[in-house]
Image 1: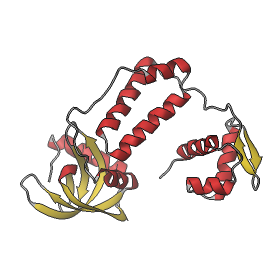
Image 2: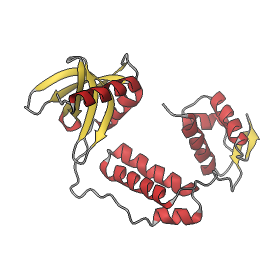
Image 3: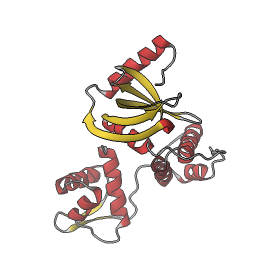
Image 4: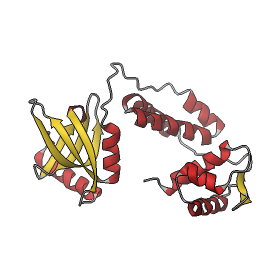
Length: 233
């Protein structure tokens, strides 16, 4: 689900890209929201200092020169952001990699000049020396985690045995060479870990699982402490 802050940034981007006035209906279509939401977001941006000319039924135009207030990061924080985003860009699935690059571009666009130069000329990199084929299920798994949906999957375990099960995915670990999914398994009635590269088929059921994700995380953390390690199944 898109947050309000993200939606406002997207609205600003849409207005910046237009050379002339753009009608609210066009903005609503571009952003996938209602016309009423566009009007409300325009008012919110004006309240935050954005100089947006126009009115409903006429069109809107962002005056040149408006920028989001500069972000200030100490050098170490900026390096951490750059390195983290570059790691995701080289190790994540294509959708996540593209998002990491967009995030870096967005941060660079609102940094003061000297900080932007530090970001663009950073000597910190996170290359993947042995490129690997990303698991095709990662975007769907990330979406299911975000939405709190149960998924049905066919899985092959370490012994080569196939099984079909319904799980409640709530976390994913991006390790050096594998992506590990933490989930509640309905078949086992317990927490299990699954390697994404061993998933053979996956279907998002669209059914919200009955427990909130933060509660599953808390229970899982307590169980991992009790067991001493996770259990792959």
